[in-house]
Image (cartoon, rainbow, N blue to C red; front, side, top):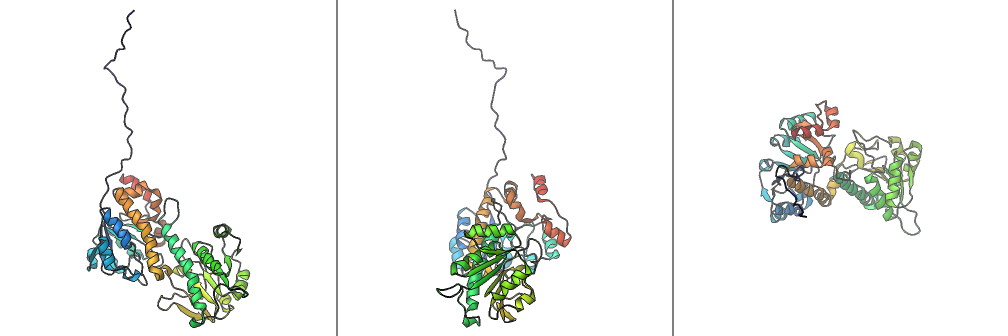
Length: 404
């Protein structure tokens, strides 16, 4: 019996269809400008010569204002060898479509900003003014702030690095001012065999508090930490790896501990607005003469009632015989380390933005970066700023979705 061959009909056919995905666009070339900072006490630079070298070898252009890295001991020669173009005209740098700054936008920068520019810089809430925001909105600027920039693990990498620097620096500064040469108490920070250890009080168990505690413990000091969040106190103990003296902020306990300490560190943070004052003038007046207060929270008003802003040139003042060190922007005093820390976050971010075909696409693909955007093409997308200045708020997620 003959076996019939299978018949292949041409009337229909099964065919696999490709799934349509969100196709990644072709990469773009970035033109990045780095101006010299004119802001008060700003020594950092947002991109180091090494980072500039990586950007340039990936086909991007970098323009740097003459002597922009000088305060962090990076010379023009280092940048030009990395492939950057050095210009002497500030206005020319501001013509770059992407502007990277290590200090907030100041009044004299506003006139130089271009339409539709992308600005990556810090944003100091205390110094921010409504007219600054309105001028930037008129120029349809997209602005990304260091402080609110999140990475994919949900942490704030630049804030964390700056807090680590400030925390570690606090103990170095305190040790310096306790010495007799600086009219301090003449006490060695830490302890040696047979001598009771120096007593350090830290207000705030955030990252600054944690790194200050690490440095103090490593030097052999006795450390006591106050914070109103029991979770933060637990986390600090876990991170440092052994049990420590901790307490919630209770005025009587705090007053008693401040009375007998050599060093008091103010490291409380506040999510919105001013830091709460927890150490009153009376508490400070009862402290031992020659002891040192370092108020890291001075950036947001300070947590000691006696604190007043000082500068890197004149960092201290005396009140009730107590040395007060209240310099805002402590990381700027360690400008090279701080520049490297900022640069190691921004350089990969810029490369990623270029690979994605621009910042708009990057913000679309990377949801965690949206928290850092406070202006998007002239629309204000930061809720705190809109509340504070009574300006119109637009949801960034809706804005981006409508542009797709």
